[in-house]
Image (cartoon, rainbow, N blue to C red):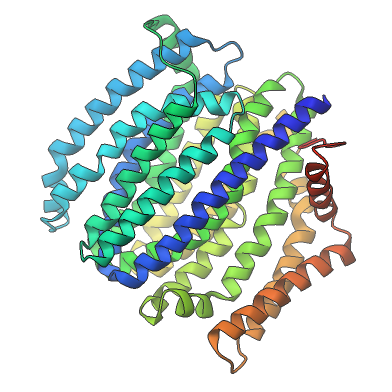
Length: 487
């Protein structure tokens, strides 16, 4: 048991380092590019990315999760899914290549046609990489992700910045995404030993499909719902409006996804291995929610409080209109780990049918909220996300009251001390932002004060997640001695 705990924690550390390294580089690069490029350029690429993101759902969801969840998945399963996925990717690329001119005509932007066609090549690349990713995740080999993701991010960053500096405009962002995906895939194929075998089983594929299609539809609904706002803003409002909305979402998402993706990647395979022991799954879910919220809340609250100074200092004043959006998304992303933990527990227990039902309910509710706010401007549309997040939390947690004996009320009670402390820290840091000093000095004071208030408050209130994190670090420094991650 101790050895398994160490493997799990080591996997989380490598996944977190991979996310932290990649997102750190991406964060720095995005600042440089934002200073070099006009907001309209970002609006154009944000619009195109929506379409590639939606199509990538067909590649990244469903079968990959089914391979991770299946107890006895072997080379026949992996190879069958690999060939099927790659064929689907080629068909999807052919579809997007054909309809690219229609997309350009719809948005009255003729320059979108070549951009859509080139950027959509990432779909084909994903088809080559996806099953390797599932293999790495199933076997907790997250160290492989560290080298592939970081390698792709760094190479793409250098080329993207060079192209932006040379005046290539939107093509600098296109090249950055395409090269990132290509290098990432090449390194992953070099470092991961698994290769597709010359076998294919339609029977195995059908078995995986019975579990995976529900997750695929769920992911498609979620992506469509998440990105529909960008499509609407791109159609009814200006490219600048879309750029400010997207930029305000980007930076909270960069940081929030670090924690959320790291935990999400480890949770599903680990929970799936314990799916017959519901008490263990409950303990993992609870620890995941408490720890991830403890890490997420101060980061998001701190960014919310320092938003104006941060944007002005890093991106220049031309991006100040994104500050209101940034604050709204900071609050929204705080609660994503609650969604992640609850949904992973449901998936690990093999209830993909229930997962799909929850997504349908949430998307109907979300569509109603979106339709009610669509005519009031991009900012009101962004704020509507706060409503859907709170309702979505309760919907996602509802099944686990019966499945795990872990109702939403108990979950909320578990994270309440962290939320109160983070709010106090946020208000205090915001007040410090009113000081008549230079931006860099104000930001420095805010960061130092925020850390001091949060750490001091954690000790004063004896928040157990604080001591849990300290013990994890100590255990890691002592090569995992006495570590019991997610227990």
